[in-house]
View 1 (cartoon, helix red, strand yellow):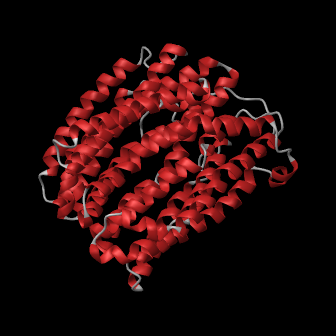
View 2 (cartoon, rainbow, N blue to C red):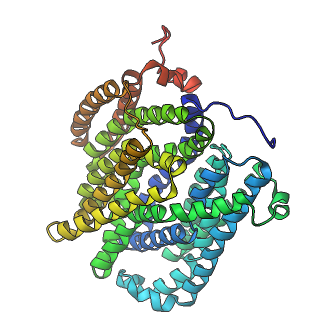
View 3 (cartoon, rainbow, N blue to C red):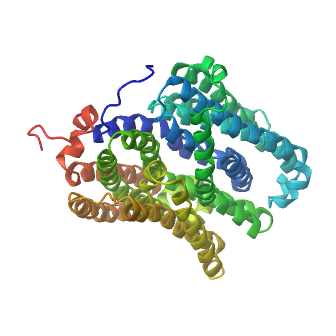
Length: 514
């Protein structure tokens, strides 16, 4: 790692290279989706709902008390002039990101008995709540460290280093431990212990990976009050409100539903929302992969030439549109079959699942503006979308929830806020920075992808009427085929060619250069 390496131009090919490995890294989310039916089978819907509520709480607390350090490094590390400055950013992130989480975890463990009665759970799980909190709360600092460590790797443009961590250790090992503890008679408590074990192993492996891309000796040698350290701290605080609110839209609905409905109904509703959210995360995965790649690349491009930012911004939006539109439509059309994996009781979440799928698709198309805004705009501009988004969600919830069942009403209010939070940064960039992704190529991409989306959705509706043993494989095949068709026939040649070997292997680029 050189101290002052020349920065190469950031192009669509840069985005594509990072995207491929990042998608593989985030496939841990798909493994997690596959694991959810097994957790419901082993621990029941209400037991799974308690686990979902506690994990949602951990996620919310982590996003508050990591003080924005995961996002801050995406801005400061790529703009660091030396390895020592990058190490200073990492040290600042660990101190101010993991330290507060340790303190909060200790306080929650101390007052677990007072906090336990706030949760609605099945009567048979009531005695487990306090010990579960005391055990599971230590996932908070572990998760904070894993998030900061993997963010530090992405900030070094090392997009694929999470693959083994996210897929093998964080998800597969968790499932294996959960199955072993369940077979050993630990019941639901075994799921909480399994989660801690997988996070602990992941954290240990994160340290090994960090040592490859950061000089640990610099963590101690670099003065504490460097400009990079100060920039990292203030960048984290400026992004923190947006991060908190974005996380609220993912996890707070499960907590709200748990508080709205008494006893086992509250736990079951939280579990149903979590099932719908996990399934819709297949679409969200696309946006997350682009966000992880775009933030450090946009920061690097901004350092060199604003026009590079505009090019990769437009490219990412075209590619996202071609992937997410048909994918969301097919999964929504086949929602009944997908929910059948979780048992008949999960069909109550069908409306919530369809709402979330289309909301996540809109968020993906619009939401690539958010990471661009974080690295090219003033810190104060990053609060606007968060404030308006949460305001719209709360207002919509106030008006809607009383007229629909709680699960559908809370989900619809959440979806309104999610789409608003994605769209506002796009407007901000267009107005204040004269950046927008809708260049002359976008209308043709949107029209072709839209036509393929309608056809694929219609086929998936027909497939959904078949018995699950036939419908599920068909829906998966239709989803894959529709995404391929949209990428092959909706995207311009240059976009497909930027995918390199992957594009050629998938035959997205014809032999005649079309």
